[in-house]
Length: 301
Image 1 (cartoon, rainbow, N blue to C red):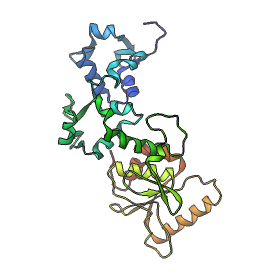
Image 2 (image 1 turned 90 degrees about the vertical axis):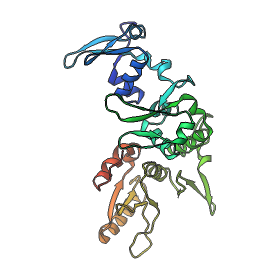
Image 3 (image 1 turned 180 degrees about the vertical axis):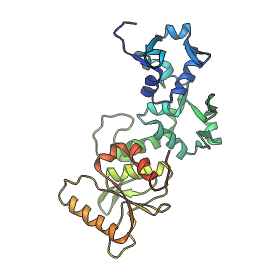
Image 4 (image 1 turned 60 degrees about the vertical axis):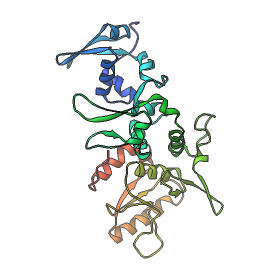
């Protein structure tokens, strides 16, 4: 390896692969790249052949680093149909986060939540999924055959998930070409879109929020009438928390700010609990919504 090559610590490599660090070390150990020596890991001859080397940190001491080019290694890609992948690695093929992929597999009924981690269902087993657990914690997780990425049911649902992220964007012809075709609904001549849970909504932002709530297992209504006098409707309502959710969007658009202030006043006068989202929150729903919902007593993982 040339000295100019970029090297990544195990933690940095795991982050780039979107998998837990302990899962990365498990994979490297299973494939003979590293081995346990007391409380530490050390390189094997195979690991050195693959480009691993020792580096030193003033704070943590020596550690194993890997060349950035190892990201393209067959071990970390879904090109081998006989390899077994974590949900995170499977999602990499489709540009989904580990959380999105895990929740989609759960929604399809292929795995279920355990007290900690995830367990495979009987339907998941028929698809070749294998139950495993982390040796250091005992937390269960599931591996999937790489061939699952070609399963028609998974592809059909992935198209909807992807479309929710890309409504209104122009795409080259690929697996998810014309994503809006998966969602498009015409109601009285007006364009609308159907979310994964069946709710019919009229904007990309509302689709993304609806999808996030549904995939997180949160019961919600869309467009519910507020329990006040007058014709007011919320964006979303979470009955278990008696919590209303409003997405305000771009306040700079004509009339947006005044409409926001007027509707917010309705919530305040009526004593209704309101959770608010703005345009800058939309790309960070995985970060923003769990934090906001926790304040109302709902933990989302």
